[in-house]
Structures are given as C-alpha cells and as structure tokens.
Amino acid sequence: MSDHDTNLYGTIHGGVMMKLIDDAAAAAAGRHADGPAVTVSVDRMTFLAPVRAGDLLSVEAGLERAGRTSMTVGVRVTAERWNHSGPAAEVATAFLTFVAIDADGSPRAVPALDVVEPARSGTN
Image (cartoon, rainbow, N blue to C red):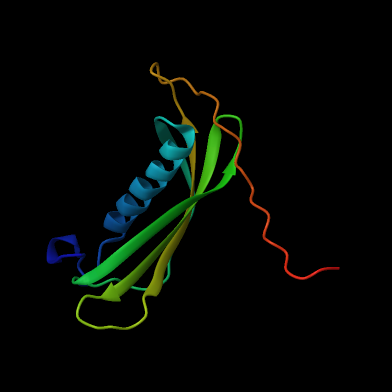
C-alpha cells in the first residue's frame, strides 16, 4: 500500500481495501462459475486493524456456498510490514454474494460446490 491510498488519519482508506476485497471475491466467484459473476451484496465486512502505507497485503478469497445462480464468497485480508519479518496480522474479513450472469446479463446456473470430507486417521 502507498501514501496515495491513505485517508485523513494516515491509514489505508477503507474504500481501497473494499475494492481489493471485491476484486478477489469476484475472481473466486468467476472461476467457480466459469464466467462473469457480479457482486449482489456485501453481507459483512469487518475491519480488524489499521493498515499503513508500506504494508504488504494478502487477500485470500474462497467459496463458502453455491446456490443455483448465486455464490457466497469469504475473504480474509492479512498485512505485514514490508521491512519487518514478523507474522502477518489479520486486518479484515468479509462475506459477499455474487450472481453468475450470461452474455445478456441474466442470471445463469453455477456448478455445485464440491465439499471435500476431511481424511480420517486411525480406525474405529
């Protein structure tokens, strides 16, 4: 993040982080839908800690749910100082809903979400 991303308090403007979150969530939804998906709602967005100019952000997005045409995507944002080797801090989380669209902008079906069962160890 750079100085042009800061607000009046010297931290990264929430709108800048919201854009990064929406971009990452849209990529996850579009990949699952195998085509365009548009943001329908921001169901929850929580800013947990301030981000400063110079921080390196990582944005991870993954599908939480897939319906007939809609998808819920969870997003986690972490930050670390560019000049320190410490653990990354979680700075924001969000859940957004997307709808897959066809070339005319109408909703279209999306694949079901594959649920992977955790491997069981040992025997019963």
